[in-house]
Image 1: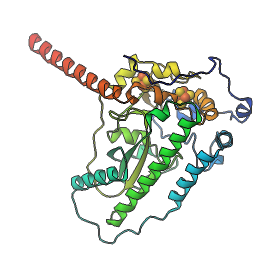
Image 2: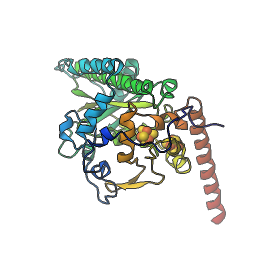
Image 3: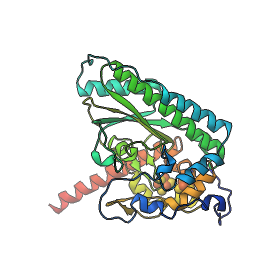
Image 4: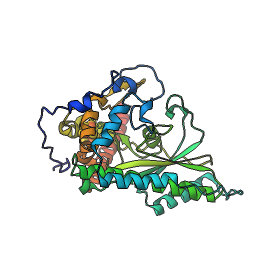
Length: 341
Ligand code: SF4
Ligand code: SF4
């Protein structure tokens, strides 16, 4: 069975970044900013997608990305997102609508689905998810999975795929804003949180805690239904909710023996082994290798497009196969324990 996506990368193996971009490259490595090889935990630092590019070392490179990918389709999506961001949230209703944490969690998930989110999970916020110098003034996050169109993403790294990514970030912004507004109308304070610009916290660990999937070798999430073909958005709130549990369905182990994304990555940025990053062992993408290619190809996207979990039908089969394997292993383990006893 062909598990990889249909993406065919037609780029020279010895791809070299544009010297104009590299002339803007800062002296500091993005991997150092990310804390690669740091054995002790610390909070993350903004490395890219800063709303104020001058506040980060790679700000000039970020501005170059925008100049390079300046076209009407991108501009249109960004204009819609700016309009969504500028829209005022409804006033907070004075009397909070009643309901238990479990009831509210179910209501929120139903409302998020109604608004168009393809996946929803809830996590209690941990202070260590905040970027250095920031504090998160909320207790819970509702994490939203916003699906990208698989067939369109097969165009990666062509611009068509980059536009699909931006389009789905815009849809995520709209859904998170509407969901936060809906909660405020029920008397529960809430605020939207969405990409691509980095806010006060990293969304990835929150999404993992909220049961939205596992971190893949390509540095993106793998969701049991959406694969890696989705973007994240969220809603921050103070109300007490019922958090979900992480969803470990075997993607992490599968990545150990799979190298499809690494083989398709033109600048060879996807590292074959887990790395220590700020005190945690995890899959890691070499920022300094990925970013120049990412910037020159309107956001690349090859690794999420080729991941077998992203492919409709194939991803579901893999999840089922991994579940059967786990069941068999636990049965064999139990039988072994009985024999040994
Ligand atoms: S392509 Fe393979 S190795 Fe890469 S994230 Fe997907 S499953 Fe993991
Ligand atoms: S996004 Fe980065 S890591 Fe993924 S394939 Fe492109 S260059 Fe490689």
